[in-house]
Length: 137
Image (cartoon, rainbow, N blue to C red):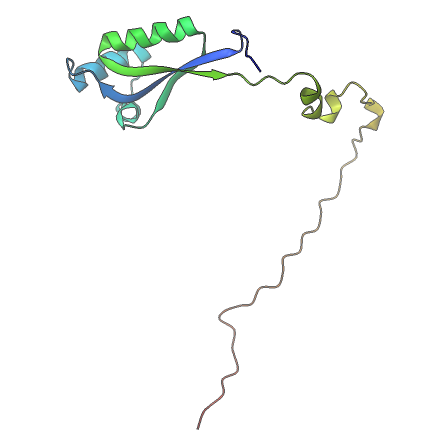
């Protein structure tokens, strides 16, 4: 199944690595200014070594532009492609709620409150209850 270009979306991923020509603090200042990060704790989360999605849902040109900008600051990042999920045809009909089905009749709706189901928990044995103790002689 081939995906159309309009369904392909891209995300920019960063994990805190900086280029050898730039100090980490210098890059962090530029990064914070560009992404408008004012909280130091929030800024540190980007430099933990874990993958962080900086922005998603972008076109390829937008993602490449953002990645280029981060690389100009001295950061190392990458652009990843993912496909947006779209349901069409029979698959879409099976995954739609019943009230969105074309043959749904509004008169089937009931606005009367339903009783909550009664759930009984199985009897659990108390580990602290008294037990019969047999004495050995």
